[in-house]
Amino acid sequence: MTATRARLVSFDGTESFDSELWTPVDQSALAACLGAAGPAIPRGAGLSYCNASAGDGVRTVASSAFSTIGDVDEECRTIVVGSGVTLGALLESIVPRGWYLPVMPGHPSITIGGCAGFNVHGKSPADLGCFIEWIEALDLFHPDHGEIRCSRGENPELFKLTVGGFGLTGFITRITLRLRPLAGTAIRVRRTFVPDLVAAIDVMEERRAGSNTVYSWNDLNRRGSGFGAGIVYSENIVPGKEWHDRPYNVLTPQGRPWPGKGFYPRFAGRLMCALYLRLERMKATDKIIDLKRGAFPINGKEIYFRLFGRTGLREYQMIIPRTRWAETVPILRRLLHDSGLPVTLGSLKLFDGAVEYLHFCASGVCLALDVPARSASRPLFGQLDDLVADAGGIANLSKDSRIGADAVRRMFPGYDGFRTDLLAFDPNRRFDSALRRRLDV
Ligand SMILES: Cc1cc2nc3c(=O)[nH]c(=O)nc-3n(C[C@H](O)[C@H](O)[C@H](O)COP(=O)(O)OP(=O)(O)OC[C@H]3O[C@@H](n4cnc5c(N)ncnc54)[C@H](O)[C@@H]3O)c2cc1C
Image 1 (cartoon, rainbow, N blue to C red):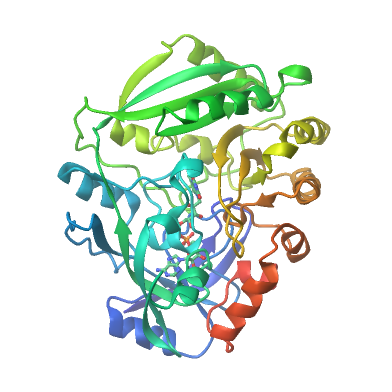
Image 2 (cartoon, rainbow, N blue to C red; image 1 turned 45 degrees about the horizontal axis):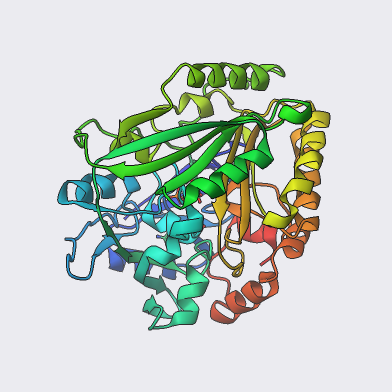
């Protein structure tokens, strides 16, 4: 087992800790590491926007050695993988054998353990659910409880507390995932131009039935009625292209920024969005791309994150009940405009599901937006907290390194239940992180 000191920075670049970083190589080294005095926290790729796998005085325990990928069980349609396996490595292994994992977040460097830790979503959560739907079982290690197998049939309460439990119930060593047979290795992308954020949702709902995935890109820098004009992408997996050998890019929080301050000036949002829309208009409405590229559209475009520089970025991702969407949009437009910040990303997804504990899952419209981390971004995000809570919505805690306990308590009916159940399972608070302290759970 190796232990080093490392400066662990949140992916958004706004918070860092000088931490002890342990890399246990097997189960017995893991037991020794987690059994030592003081709190610990598991870490995947560290690609959460907040410090969910680090904290002041907390031992960070890397999952990178838990990287075994088993054989696909074709009858059960499952595979057993180590929690440190990245999504990219998993796809390299299963796609040539004709299998696919339908729910994957945006970058191939993200680990399976990290996906479980935040119960992440992919491009079409309304139809495919969140990551928990694709977990059959998991093996958890906690120094006071030993090894525990959890699934919907075995220790179901702990299963529910662990998936989306921010690594606070213990270290997941292995996960059994459900897979789908692959219909092809190409993606047909259909693009529809929309005039605003409300029309975008109407088109997405219409397209949902005939597509594997539906999402959008929107320009949130426009004023007036064109606020949120953009493109709805509806995609289907089809036969056609080769799965090629070109490796995926590696993204790390330390490697994200270019040296120095951020690049995006005040006019950057308007300029970038206008340029992007113009380029998209020049392309054909339908196109076929290979699955490797289509699975992770951000792969190869990491420069977007680099240009935020060392000062970093802030992302807000919210789910607003469908019935409150139309009245939320004008308030959002005013808040963004008054902040004077460039909005470098705006994107919509549709969600369907019940709010459990602190999971980012509910029924409604999901909007993600990025701004550079500047003095104006914190007050703006505070106003967005109020907007979301008043509309009966929720915020994505994996994307946010500043939201406080009060706002989270207002948004999530399961806040008290999560806190109580976590303390009942781990009364000695063996697991801790900057996220846990900020949320006061
Ligand atoms: C470019 C980019 C795109 C993204 N796109 C999406 C998206 O589309 N949808 C979405 O939902 N999210 C998205 N995210 C967020 C990301 O999926 C989550 O933050 C995810 O948890 C990161 O996983 P990680 O491997 O980096 O884990 P970390 O950030 O290191 O850890 C995340 C959490 O999981 C816990 N954890 C990690 N490993 C284990 C383990 N072995 N046992 C127990 N707990 C563990 C940690 O303690 C921590 O609480 C994106 C992030 C980036 C940078």
